[in-house]
Amino acid sequence: MENFALIISAIFIGYIISKRDIFAINTPLILNQFIIYISIPALILLKVPKLSFSFEIFIPVFIAWIVLITSALAVFYLCKIFVFSKEVTGSLMLVGVLGNTTYLGIPIVEAYFGTEALGYVLMYDQLGTFIALSTYGTFISVYYSSTQKVDKKALLFKMLSFPPFVALVLAFGLIGNNFHPVVISVLSSLSSTIIPLALVAVGLQLKFKLPLHELKPFSVALSVKLLFAPLVALVITMLFGWDSMAAKVSIMESAMAPMITAAAIASMAGLAPRLSTAIVGYGILISFFTTWFVYKIII
Image 1 (cartoon, rainbow, N blue to C red):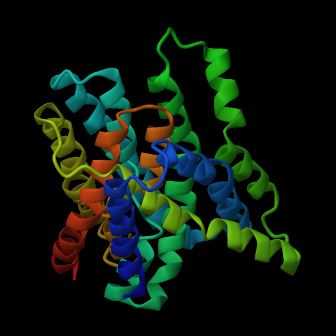
Image 2: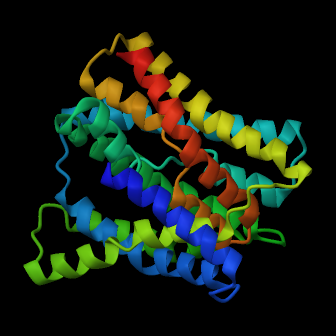
């Protein structure tokens, strides 16, 4: 309950502040930069080294990547069909594909399945969503934000130097190592800033009345993320005959709202910031109902 209260409160606070002109107009950009360059790398360095590879990761990770690939293809071709601009396409390739599998995934899955299911949440999130954010997310943000012909070498350099990606590579090299308590304390404090800062940034940019021309991409992104993605996960589990806790948790994770961090990356890259944050903001509220519906289907 506390997690849900924080999500709603932080978005609301950001929205109210935006109406009062209390902060500078570029505050959302500054918050997003802090998240990308400090908060996310800290979280990756804190969590990834704690992972242990085993057969149990198979179902969540497999489903996570199949859902990601099929969702990306669906968004890409829908953008082609509706002739969306490069900026809008880049936005949808981020917020319409990447899910909020940690900060919504953990409280929602725990509420429905209990604490024993959280191990599968971390597998889906860490080896699926987080790696996708650091690789796929980096590529999409760089490729679609470019106004000129993409220089492959420059693109590769930007991907390899992107802070979350650098942190991920470093974290994989540290798997099995224990940090000093002071280091853990620092990383925990820095990573804990993601939720409030990202949600406030969303609230600061949230627009409830979108221009008519943005309603179509808005609907495409949420339809793919909240309906198509869990349907793909459900079909996979049916094809393989999986009915375990790992399978059910994976379906729930695939149904999570668009990732807040994806909107932060889209905004920082100039990929339809207003549209990106609106998709995430409304997606979070709508997902409370759609995840309940998905849960009723799989139990």
